[in-house]
Length: 136
Image 1: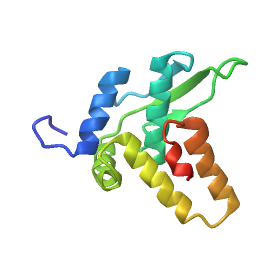
Image 2: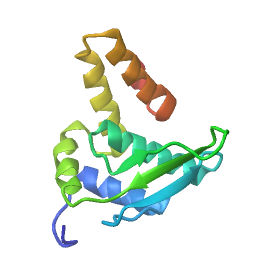
Image 3: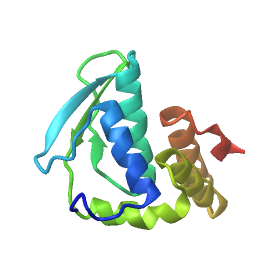
């Protein structure tokens, strides 16, 4: 979308986070390796997992090359329709963190099986632990 168009608060937060974690919206698919022992790697991972919770599949975790659990490999590719997803998800919150948390809570409240509840808890707890209130 052109820069001169007004943005929703969620889009603004997303763009600020992209700058903060030094990721760019690129149409070319690329693989990035995140070192979860560093703040930069953890912050990128948390952002990508939160976006997945919101249904914005910009990144896909493709595992790691090694025996340790401190690295993640992500395949990322920006698509223009992701901007529309961000606009739609603005109803859930004005920041990526709050929107992902609210969306996760809503999913948990309508869960009809233990499997769905456990998957949501895994996403909230293990992958994006900075949003623990979704587990209450």
